[in-house]
Length: 178
Image 1: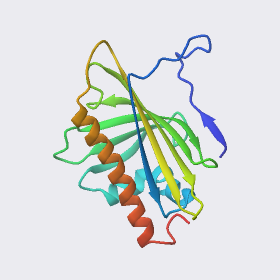
Image 2: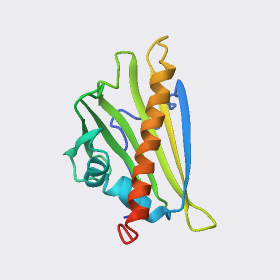
Image 3: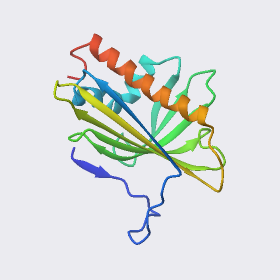
């Protein structure tokens, strides 16, 4: 597939990029090779994740595009969740380097003073054939709004739980996404 990047129509090469107000990173080591975990957790996430986490995710669907760069995914969360749904745009997808970037563009998670949240996901091969997944999130805040640390921590835990669920599935199904 190669490298494909999405450029927001409002971005100009002469405008300096904005700096995130808050940034966090999660790293997770896995015995699963990057190609398998990337295919399962990124490329086929719209099919696999609702099956693995039905208590959290009701359905994932593309509301624009076919899964490539510029596509918009809507994640419909399960009953009892603090949010009904979220939408994000795929900004970069590289199946050779196992990198994926996306921006949360709509949903209750984008509270009034939060402009956007960007995510940068990368899977790197380890010497033992497994992988290290790195997820970096950047929050762009309007004004002097303060984010709730507990909500940020809960978000990190949800991301990590998703990767662990995919990892467990791949360990139990060694031929899946091979």
